[in-house]
Amino acid sequence: MSGHSKFSNIKHKKEKADAQKGKAFTKLGRELAVAIKEGGPDPASNGKLRDVIAKCKANNMPNDTIQRSIKKAAGEDSGIVYESITYEGYGPAGIAVIVEALTDNKNRTAANVRHAFSKNGGNMGTTGCVSYMFDKKGQIIVEKSDDIDEDELMMQVLDFGAEDFNAEEEEVYEILTSPEDFSSVREQMEAAGIPILSADISMIPQNWSEADDDTAAMMEKMLDQLDEDDDVQNVWHNMA
Image (cartoon, rainbow, N blue to C red; front, side, top):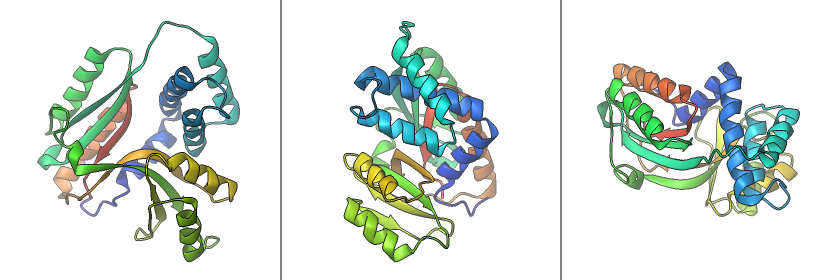
């Protein structure tokens, strides 16, 4: 496991989503609810909602499920308020970890996240302890295929406003944008018929940390435990 891809975050989340679609859909439903509360239920006038809908589709959520979730969130007033909270800390062997959560109970979520760190050879730190080692970027992933010309794709996305294009990985292309340009680039790519594997605002490590097999195994257990928590939306780390 020491030869982990830099896209292990994405691959791990996709594998977990495939294995536990119900839990993944629950988390996406929370994101839809928060987006609707902030900007209303109409995707035409709510850019954040458009982004979350695109994320739902990338995670294979059926259209009728998306629409039901939107109608439910737009029509209900359950009194539940989800708050976005970010936790930072160190995984096994000092791997930098950022956890993003949506929760209606900060004490419960903090306790669960802290337990996931401590149980797997890590420790939760203070705000800012590792985030300086990451850059906030729009990250769009396109799967490589014979139907996609690499040079043409690169020229297209750069013309759309992307900041960077990475073709180093064997299986995927990575397109990076500023957070402000993320929605525009993603929508232009969709309009151009470019198949998107995943698209989200991500924390991109400035440097990667190599891990031996034991460390990688402990890290996978920690990621699994965090994924099991309904409050946890995203986990980023710098393990290569």
